Length: 221
Image (cartoon, rainbow, N blue to C red; front, top):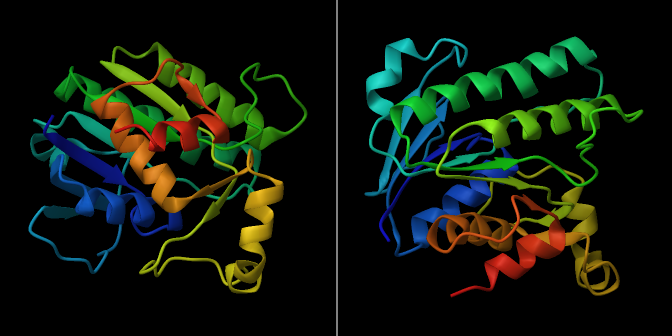
């Protein structure tokens, strides 16, 4: 199938990796990235909207029509952030964008990057996990064609990525060992991006994808 995808968070590590994978995939014919600042990437498949206020999509709403996939990779770290501020960015902003997109594109498949350890009960002791769980649960209630919650663990960046945390430079020599010993907790960025694309192409039997599900879905042809 021809995939026309919206990608958010493309100036972060996960979003950039998903974008690079989508640009290479033959089934992805069109990509729209929505960034707060220019991403600096050009490609025949790629269009970019620079928009500062993701809570006000009215000025760009007409440009969000005729897409059948959204790879939602936008997010912030919970470190040093109050639960209220974290919720505004993680829950309120995500739901606002998701509700807008599903109205504009009823046949859209929505892939949300959550994280390993997310709390579906919304009652655990970790604030970030509760907020992520609340966000997942709300997204799964929206009338998308399909919705998948991606819970990656440790992600290995791919060649060509610019938005990679400095500490990865120290961990890269250990990655082959880490992947062998902790295979259920490690994915490559290639696997995450390909799994998202395959969720649109073939679907998946579960709406919540842990690391082993992500790695399995990435292998589907």
